[in-house]
Length: 251
Image (cartoon, rainbow, N blue to C red; front, side, top):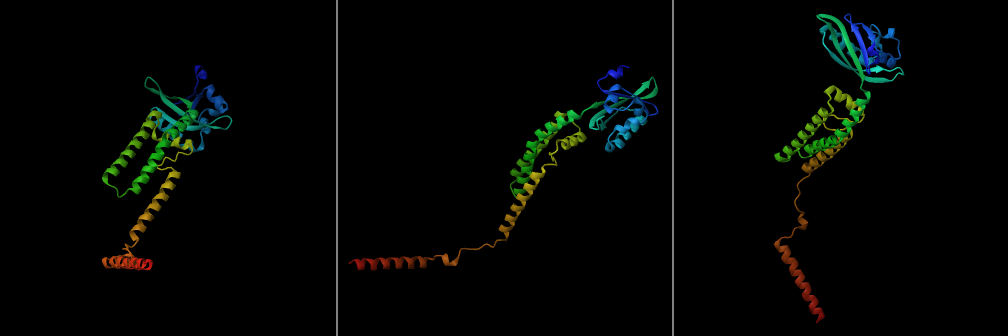
């Protein structure tokens, strides 16, 4: 069969939703015999955390007789889990529904690459957004132009994030997965965990300084250090008298 020579994993299911065929690449990947994959045996290869979601998508597609897409982890013959994109389309013979045909493509390496690229592009934006949040807190009492400038920075950062997602051509669900696969992105609306801790500490210190300034009593100059006009004249008189005594001693 020509499908056995296809560079992707191919499957066929009848109108009763049971798998009737998988190609040679599928069998080589799973390491299981054909009979083990037929019926609903193929679903045993799906990661337990993904299985219910995938079967729900599969069942709904059969009910509606519409094409579907699903992403899930599939167990390789050596026990490793690989991410796959599954695309299924209904098979129609004139007006009769005969089942579904589909293909599965391994996207693990691609997603890991996209995760690294996404991380490298987002990291500088992480810092900009974090410190802008900090400035907003520190400059809460600033003039309106300052707040407009900070808002402009945030708008620019959000625009760049959307642009990155568009360039990488990812949907919101996939973007969350990429952030997880990168390991240390912590892209949580603005602050990484490290920057969040730093910003929180700096804001607390700033608030404490402001509170101390407000609570500190407004003290005037020390009365003992004040000089009135009379004091100044008295001091000048004592200085003149001292000079006179010095001159008399010299005579």
